[in-house]
Length: 390
Image (cartoon, rainbow, N blue to C red):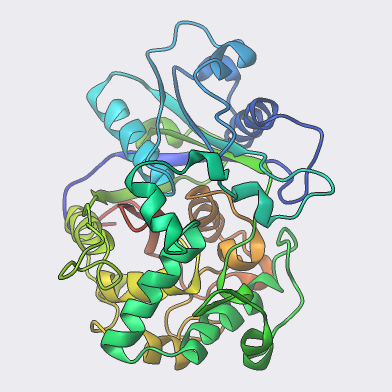
């Protein structure tokens, strides 16, 4: 079954998530690392590696090590592949442990874009003064936000394959049903397909309920060797495989923009390393900045044929009781938006069997995805509560 990585996630730290005010991203990140260490039964001094990722605010950076009082680190770096960063950080941490460069590495993401008395949408608005050169041409055409570019990708998929808004709505409804079982989720009230269709346009063909939340908070995980994991406080979440894909789509005539993503290559790499196929996967925790990204990722991973993602989602496969439980905590659409740490944190919870009312019936193999930029970057992790081959 593939090669043995010999590494595990042994700690998970999550601060309050959502409309959390009064704490800087650096403070939130420090709290998350402390919580992860406590969860693992480790002291902060046991860490000899720290990988840091920040969101829109530009903090925290590697100065977080000083905030935490860490000394004599053997690995310290700031990592950024946007939404693909969490998967990348974990793989870098695992490779550092395997090589002997470090023994115990914390990976943390923090952001606090929400401000009191400001709309969530304003957190990601780009100042008009930033438009210059060729970017000014796209802005003149109305492509002035991430929403607009993802709407363009969604429209491309619809035009090519006949994907419908109602099929995207099925993803939103299933995700919210999972969130209703998650006490940490920001949005827990059930929704219907009619609610999805009646929600306002954000950037056609994307409705409000096709788009993710905006959240403040921080999440950290700790990676170490399987041998060391045996002596720690929580059951280890084994790392079976990882991969990245950075397609570099040019948004021009004849490109595959909107039709394929880096999930195709990163998924193939991770599954080959893990020695599995899609038929072995029990749970998917997918990066869902939009309902569309769930649909296209499912296709590119091979859970359904290209162009059949809409029908697969509409079949009920993704929700509670479905054949492929997906985004079991409510994802970024309904739970909280912590970039790639959203799917990763839920994968750890599911692998440990800590899901409570939302625990999936089988958790032997879990696929975790991260998506960054405008479909520019992708990461994949395969995790399990079991040793590979056991």
